[in-house]
Image (tube, rainbow, N blue to C red):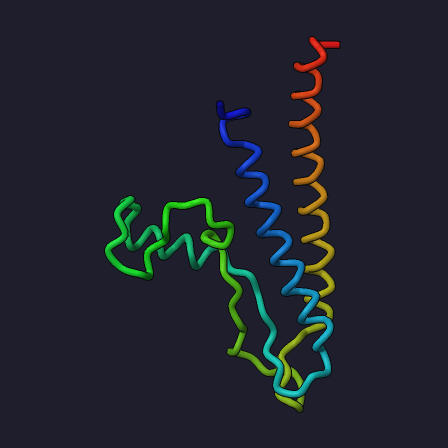
Length: 131
């Protein structure tokens, strides 16, 4: 039986994405003064565009195609930003951008947690018989 038509699983996958993004941002902030460090980002759009251009057939004909599985990392990937250099030591971490991204991601994560708590609250209400 699939409770909530897969909503819980979708929220779980989205929480995993927000967690990976938080880890990338935290890594960037902790390496703000590391020479030649290139900041990282968690990309979802790139993977989505690859799926759209390669087709969405369930049969994988190339290793680059996304697998249709429950793999939590199949919808996003961590990529390095190599195009820019902000500091004299080759580091490209913009601390102001990272702090803003961290705050935005924390709000996003909390909204997801609130939504999944609401789903479990609905389930508790049903189990208790509506009271």
